[in-house]
Length: 124
Image 1 (cartoon, rainbow, N blue to C red):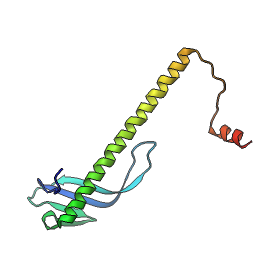
Image 2: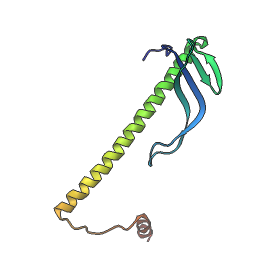
Image 3: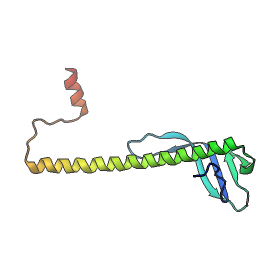
Image 4: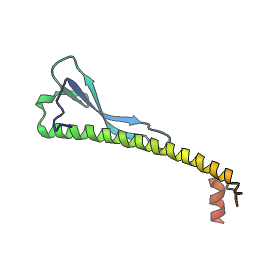
């Protein structure tokens, strides 16, 4: 990606906070929102906390920080996707392991009812 994100007619929007819910095992997170929208004009703009700035007026350091922010959000989304993939893989492997153990005819040596009974047994 270029060090300057000024190609094309793009409006960059950065809001204060947004909440994302990724999946059962991920928490709700407060993050800075970055979204790109096409504009009908030739001027690119940055919307930051409800205020609109022309991109061509931003200093180079601000453009670099904006690019870093966009890249970091992209990486976060990639990691969230990878976590969902790994979770699905764990579920598939657990099912496969259960089938293998069942097909082997191995009898369990004990059965655990739930986490509460484990905690009570460990405390005793």
